[in-house]
Amino acid sequence: MVFTKVSEKVYTIIGPPAYANITAFLLPGQAVLADCGLQLPAVTEVKRALEVISNVQIRTVILTHFHSDHTRALPAFADCRIISSPSMLTNLRLSGRKPPEGYQLTLPNEVFADRLEIQDGDARIIVKHTGGHTDGSTYIYSPEHGVVAAGDNLWINYYPWGGAKNGDPDLWIQALEEYLSLNVEHFIPGHGPVGTKENVLELLTYIKNVREAMIEAIALGKSEEEVIRAGDEVEYYTSGIAKSSTLRKWQKIWCERAEIM
Image 1 (cartoon, rainbow, N blue to C red):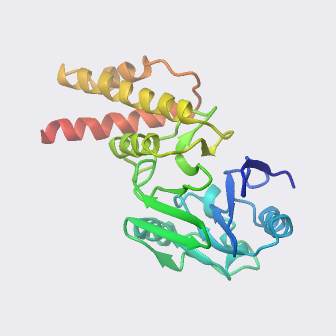
Image 2 (tube, helix red, strand yellow):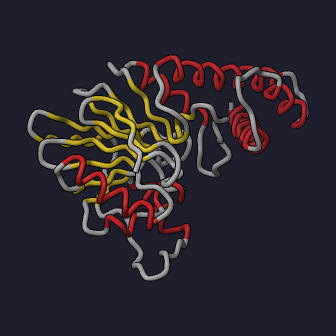
């Protein structure tokens, strides 16, 4: 199993076999995971390998949001403390997801409203619910190691899919601005390689520029397609199949908010 050492006592698996990134914070008395990935057999091996490397057991799993590529392998951690925001737990329950064959459905067994802190010896894990990519989106921050696991509020080398029905681009912008205020060197996205504040700023600038272009088009009374085209003309270093659904969702949100105003 290939792990990337991000910082002292912080490791991550980028992409396969988990598909969405998994991050391990190795505290004095336990390992804490940010997300658990998609493929249960592979993630079970990840769990074993991490416990060998760290010489501590995985006792806590913190979920950044409910999408299956980040949560499908939860049955591998049924004996752990599994933490999420309340809205994320609600989303999981409403999804009607069935467990993999031979396993029982595993859901978060602890929720927090806004902020949670885990203290273990001289190490801390700070968990913050912000919304953004989804209404339950959460980040995990290790001040001592200068690392944030951002989930899908951060994408690097991928287009930032924003088409989730319960996502909010304005809250996404606020979350990215909050990341930049932290004393952090390493940012682990939901998908893509470990990045820096430059990657956070790049994504933040893009979403803000799309918002500005779309809101201007809305104010001018442009049609739905013209508003989407205005957003599409904003340059970004990567694109893909997620771009169309993202821009359509953002257009709808900003049109509704313009009508309220």
